[in-house]
Image (cartoon, rainbow, N blue to C red; front, side, top):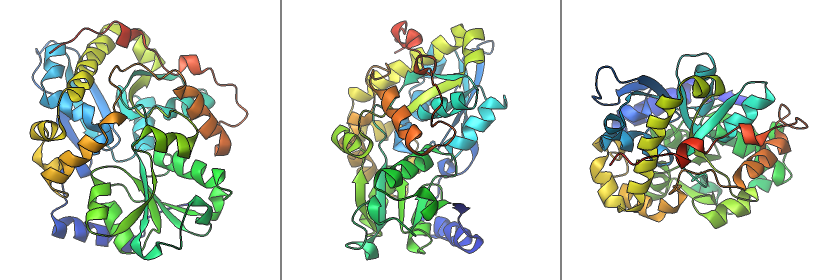
Length: 353
């Protein structure tokens, strides 16, 4: 049962956005120029499922470091809060690539659509399930979700996938919950404060803001490998750059330039502190929670980032198992996991730094 945030709650969210200082360009749909590579450099538009989320950090960080330019590609980043909508735009040919969770490639194959991840950026989801503070002691696990309103980014997003899986795994039929698309950042927090949702799945820096304000408490934490395995049963590769197989096959030189840039960024992340990373990022990315908290969150969850860009060998199987548990489209389908990702570009990557 999928319902979006009510009009009243959405208006409240907009008000909170204006009043709290949490607003940012990154929290709204927008275009972000990738830099100033040579005019004749290939142009690529990438839609990212929430640019200001730390789980999608590499996309904007690559721009800030100038790596798109050094790799020889002009990148236009489009911020789209929901990964499901970004995927639809890719299939429709409106964008060439998506910055989103790898699991969408499995869901697409089940629909007879062919796409693939060309670089893996997160080896674990980095997602956190938080519940309202007034429900502490009443909601102790997803087993208590029946009849509850659960916040997701949007219908068809990876937060939707994971929420349905966690409910199913804990004996709750997802149809017995109300899943509301409330985005992230200020809109997510507003939905929780207005009791439009009981619990919700979100990421940093929203998690830090929720805890700082005592708006909610952590129910499940997938910012660590141990937490991810406990919740999902194994390694769950998350953020990736994925594209249609047709585009990859027709533009291998462009894909290689992009992967060169992203692999360089992933290595740069590992060699720098949260504060050093925050120093490079646009100020509006941490305006709500504050720069120190933003940097602290980065330091605590740096392990979510894939240092090599190579797909974790056991990851695709875990993703398939998760989707098969609840997704009627995927369940029972023969999925060729080997065609949902490729490591060929990562293996051939040359540093641009």
